[in-house]
Length: 231
Length: 189
Image 1 (cartoon, each protein chain N blue to C red):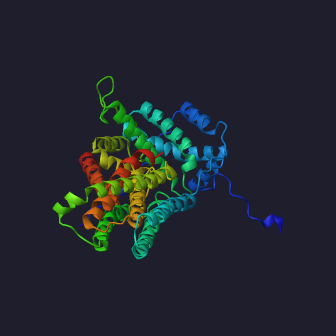
Image 2: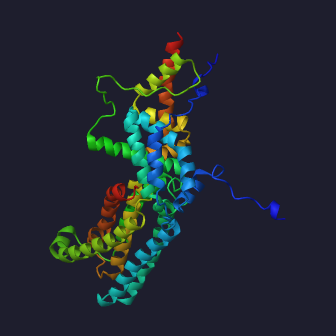
Image 3: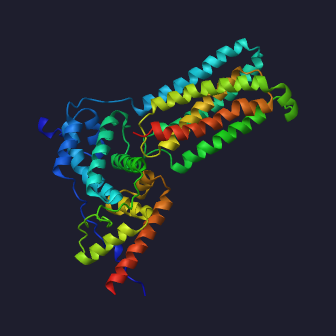
């Protein structure tokens, strides 16, 4: 015998209304001297985000002429940069350009924020032209790795900070996740740009100096997004 | 023929998203219409969170102040009610963190404050019993029921507001309803 479920029939009724005086105050505050306050559209913010990332990669590509890298190595790095640029654009569209509530599902965006940095680190391992034993790397390669890592962090911070500024206050629903996406995009742009200009192809160097910036900015972006991306 | 031309929709016919667009463009009448349509939903949600009408009114003002300041960053097409509910919820938790006040605050006379039961269409005693059960159930269940069953959000929208997956929200609603069902059965016996 099936039992009739009474609960779906509950009509919860009208919620209570705030006091008239409160409503009056809110209306006054929100409509006094009300002017058009149209900010940038999502498309404009998205295009500026692409421009920002492309500018950083462009500047670092230009600077690569002075690092002594061969043209063939720069060309190969640029092919990689184009591939990551396409991933960058896809993540930007799914993760930030679509309005909150209509963006890719939380699961998809979280998967982006976790798997893409891992994929990038794996890509660096495949793209490496040499691999030193860890002990020898620590003896010989640390100085350049620190310098390169600082540059990756600086350029990554420039793009990630710019993204935070462009998308500030736009996402009350998932600000942490959107921040992680912004951090991912910033870190990726910095790391890919440094990847074009850096003459080293050693695995440890690539992982530590280039790859760690991406991982770091995803975490920082999550933290910063909760503060800056929510209204 | 001029008479057959479609008329521009009045504020009463426009969607919440359309009203928000007009408000962002500086239309005060659109804000008024928007306020009429969302204020009691936001207020009802805040009353349940705070269990205190006065605090809920303060938070409602804070929420609308934030909405007003953030209107230029509203992205066209974003669902308005979840957008505002998320701001209201964040305001509540920010305030609670700042004051280190627990949700289960006792009022000055040492009793647990209870929001006035809404009109559920049920006999008063049953309605009050359900309200009591709703107030006493875990916050996660209560919020899920409040957003989906009372405020009218879809499960996906409620999941966005709560920062959970749709499956988790469905589960919370289901478990919350189990609590209500038990209460109702106990009352009928």
